[in-house]
Image (cartoon, rainbow, N blue to C red):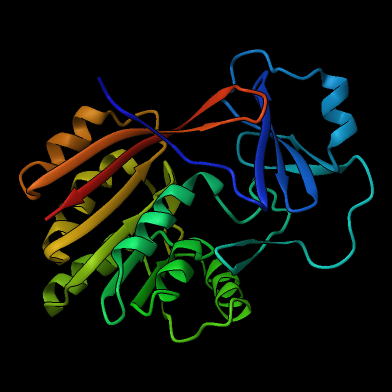
Length: 280
């Protein structure tokens, strides 16, 4: 039986309800409606109640983009939320995302507990840097790798707005950087990966996670120090827990595999992918 790990809501974030392939979320004072394929069940609240609560709804135009519809006036000022005293800027993107994956809070808590000042953390596919900022807040040395320059700029803002500095920024493909670090002989105490199911490299080359995952896990194992920790989350429907276990087992002394879930305030449960925590 695969265990379920539930990532809890916190003061500035709440998964209110889910259903009919959508989810209703509160980010600070702003409530959004966004598409969610895993919400294939009926919601607890009515469509009317959703619309009465929400400020914004994302309307899909294709599988890769859409637009935001304003349902009611937004609070004034920058759209930010906070976690453990750290600040994260949110924005409406054409990809339905707002700059943060709140289900990762359970991993942020583990990062905060695991790291100590002077340890080294590598964040691959680092996006807008929530895990990087949490890691830096412990006093650890953090290397942040992403293939999109705009996301690195966004992550820098989150770092500075959280009162931190000196994260090492790398604009490069995650696997290429990891393989270069192998050759350089660099090692880390903690490696974090939350890769998308598919992506575009720094030179606009397309890749799929199922083609890279085995090599990513192997590289992470080589780069980890003894007693180091790999945290990996996958949301790709083409990757199974059995594959993750097969790729990880040769390299790690202890493997924890789980499903990542969140409960809505209304009592629904939403699946957020597979989670690997592997200790070398």
